[in-house]
Image (cartoon, rainbow over all chains, first blue to last red; front, side, top):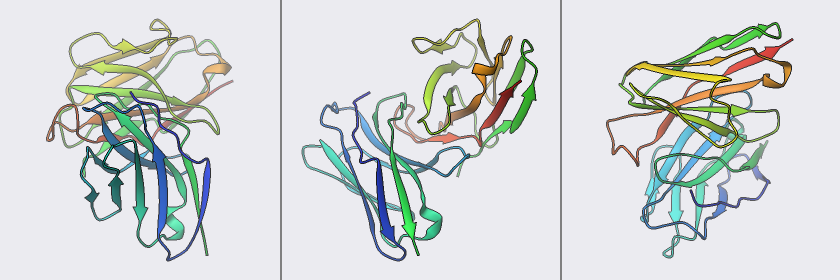
Length: 107
Length: 119
């Protein structure tokens, strides 16, 4: 699995967009980019994943750069319940977690 | 979405005893399940890959005789922590990949986690 680098923490105002960056410069051609989040003392929750095209679902949007060396997860209208640790993973068949970004959504 | 359930959600045991944690995929069959461990304020660490009908594949540094994994059916994998000690106290999480999507690219669904405290 390719190594990923994320900022350890970010803050966002409630109702604003939260943009979480991730660097995965060593990603290989067949590795997907996955995003999960974990609220304290719960199992991780799947958010979105993609290979090279931008993706959008009911939770978030995923923007992957053309060279695939980085990506951004966008929560369009952050709520207090979006406060969590967000993990970006570049992986094939296994998912190994890095340290993630602690996103705090403030009222 | 797909649901993965773990039992028990928390367990307290005495040092030297063994503890079994169950992981079930409730609405799909999972040929592969994964077991993770998470210590406080740390990320999830992959312990092993559980394959239905065959031996589990353990990550480097994880003792296979200490953490016994059995994946006897397509909906159930179990993790047994044998002769547990206080340092084994942790949050154990399982996950399974839904077979409804490509085997290597679909999302993993995670259980709620099982918190083990060894006294």
